Length: 220
Image (cartoon, rainbow, N blue to C red):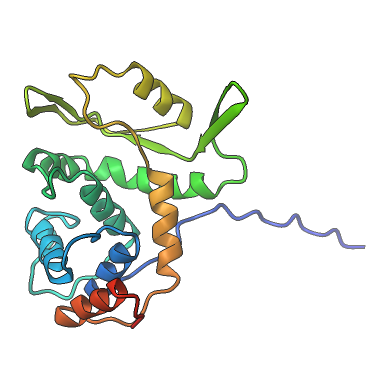
């Protein structure tokens, strides 16, 4: 009698993504990043990030005239840049930091998604007087520090557990730290979930119109 082979357990991985510019705009809009901004303005702002090298480097994919494709890591970098805006603008020093540490950050993006869907992921719980709250997933500490109105440090970025993130928050020095750890697992899962419902959207004005329809409650 032949013995059954042990079933191979596949390691979780990030679903492959390849979005057009229009689909990228739709997805970021779906996640609420363009809230309160006119669609055309939001499209222009995202294009301006490409001139700063976000989310593409110098390999040529970021040239304005090219039909680029956005993969998972590109979407995560864009989302992170939008989360780090100050008064609607990404500080130059933050843009430089995201570019300089791109090779360190991209594995963290993938790890954040895998950690976020893991059955037994890292968790921290707090209980007090009959009330409780908890947090799960992978957090990102960028090491951004501000002093006297200017950024004095960026990085190296590191992935931290919810417990470590809570400790950083509780023991942070208010004058010296302006950016607390971000829950990147939540961002990663939101991107993957939204990507399952991508419409067929082109570039340019077609993308802006699609976002406008979404803003008024009309699906494309």
